[in-house]
Amino acid sequence: MACEPSAIEDIEMAHPDLYVDHCAVMAAAQMSSVSASPYDFLVECEGFSPPELEGNTSFVLRVGWNAQTELTAERVRVTEQPKAILERAAVGLAALLFAHLIPGGEMRVTDQGQRADFWLPRLRRALEISGTQQRAAVPRRHRQKIAQMLANPRRWNGYVFVCCFSAPQGLIRWSYNTREDYHT
Amino acid sequence: MSRPKTKPAVGLIDDMLGEASWLISHAQALGDYGRYEEEAAERLRAACAEEQTASLLEADGQDLEAAIHRVSAASCFEKLGQYTRAVTLLSAALSGELDEDYHAKVERQRARCLAQVAKELARTSKRRRRKQPAGR
Image 1 (spheres, rainbow over the protein chains, first blue to last red):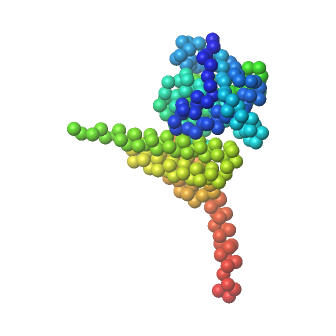
Image 2 (cartoon, rainbow over the protein chains, first blue to last red; image 1 turned 90 degrees about the horizontal axis):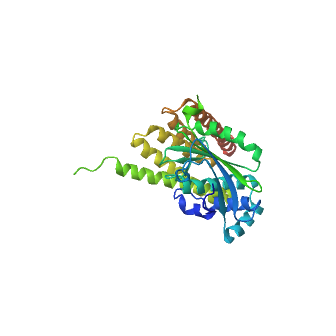
Image 3 (cartoon, rainbow over the protein chains, first blue to last red; image 1 turned 90 degrees about the vertical axis):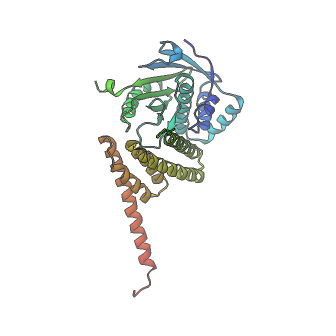
């Protein structure tokens, strides 16, 4: 199943409680290092299916970026740390998917030390995001992040979003995990 | 007609939570771009917003949320090198009921900040001793 193409710049208006403009640029920087615009991700959902997908748990997400973003992204690729670009790029993709596919998925950030990167206050769920360039690293990273997310101080259930930027297609493993399932 | 009791508080708290989130994310972005002075200024605003939000949450009876936002404020102050403020906030957060794991994590953060306060104190005492004229 393929999802409607999305522009990474869409995230700038989608999360009023977050400054994510730089995440859009860093996502474009990361994606343009492996592909011209647009770039495709295979998205694999576990433990849930976004309502719009009518029960499907995997789909192809096509993400594009405009010429202005591309220009800024080129500069960012030269001047910023690769690790920071990768992590913020993953946040950009998560912001895009939550805005498009999860009703009430407005994100808020927490400062370090809360054991989950973001909160979805309307849904009362936590969100942990991670980025990688190695496809083989995704399953292990995903398991680590589930444990980390579920140890959040609010004891909320939540989502883990691991985004791999690899050629020719990216991979997103996106799960919904509950404390009940994890501890049984 | 009586006014609903909680609505205005909830609206105000939600606005403050949103503002704190925006300020933290903006500070992080400035840090990513190496604009450290601006990052520090924004982080200070974020810390103050988190601290105020924590008080509002406590007044609204949301003790766990208040503690979580105090820890977030403390993390901002710690990054700014304002360890005494961080210790005060972490001590306040620890006075409530926290999940065991989280409590241990906050305790460690408090110990780390307290160690920094002790270092500052030692440095200040040393400077003062040097400034004192001989014979006094």
